[in-house]
Length: 573
Image (tube, rainbow, N blue to C red; front, top):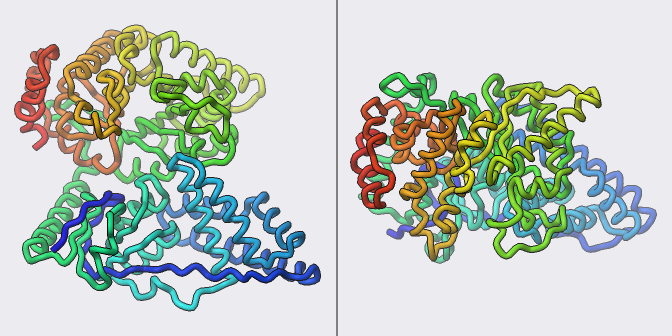
């Protein structure tokens, strides 16, 4: 037996035989064509586009297709209809005398290399989408002799060097419970589709081929990122127990779906969701959550090769808002740093971008980008309950400057005669110590506050949580952090301003009794832990408030550990 640890990409537990899937790329013909043949090649190209478009549209019409699949296949349709790409391929055929397969391959390769050259992870996903569409087009003109997915079934654990979004759908059709892939990120389209289709996935296992051979029996646990080769009887028994536990958790979650998130002393706690992609909006209705407490809009920049227009943003925001209306959609304006989008907007390289021109600072430094986004949001607010939230606010002056621009955008839309809703709630993120210390003034001006604990911890303790050398100092319940959170809650209550927690702390069950005891009435959590957090909320009672109220937050870390992990444990265990 050999236990290996990788990265859990999608929850799922499966046992079966390992099968390496080698997806052979069709050999591209190297011959050139004559000028006389170019007309026929162009006709073949148009036929390939028509067939691919029809194939994708048929998929989109299928009743069983998930919203995640619709979103991603819609992206692939846009790539097929990309006029610039089509022009490149046409010129490659007519001017360079390339055959249609070679012309397609060269044009797509250029786009793929462009996106792969970008450092941000979101761009590599864009490259994968182009590679997937290229494969689809070439498959029509150069069909493979054997389908590598045909032999898969529910007892298979396929292993890939790489896999595309469209191939995830094939795994679902073959009833595959889990798979292993060498390099996938959690935020990739492949990862998103795997979670949407409930297919377990583990990635980033070193020396995979050395340890796992074709035909080996393996257990894959996508939640923990664990793979067990040739499990013994004890491991198989544990696997069976985990399957039973998963079934019980699923049943418990289903029972919680339609139950209000009240504490035992009848206090209502709103539990909203944090989302980063439009396709995740369906989870609001699926889970019966309170809405969206944080929509990270950066994907509109990071997955594009151009600045997102007002029309493009309006379409995204309005569709999302209308889907969950009257529940709130809290849109955080672009939390960008100059280093992240240098290909779109020239910006000097910063030695420390986390302390540099990012968040609202970046937006105020590039007002036209901010205005475009704010006008799109105001227009979309006609279709639902939208709230705006500004990130990286340092104090009340920062917030008022951003709000002033929002007012100007509303005036411009009014003068244009464009339908919009200027009467929407506007709030501030509390993620910098100065903002927490200025929370009394901010609460007076803001309609709501939202505490982003990830950055608040980082800036309060001067520690980068992604730096392994110092991550032991990244302590979310450090007394200094808790004092800033409590100060924000107290200051907000003086002005009747709602406060939510949208950082990682809200998604960790051990912190929920502490936060509720401090007076938090709104949480915004990751969808994967929604039911778990709701269960803890329903276990909280009035006694909890007295425990936390009487606690001295000026104390040492060991005493806070005692409070969180021993005194409050009955509420979340």
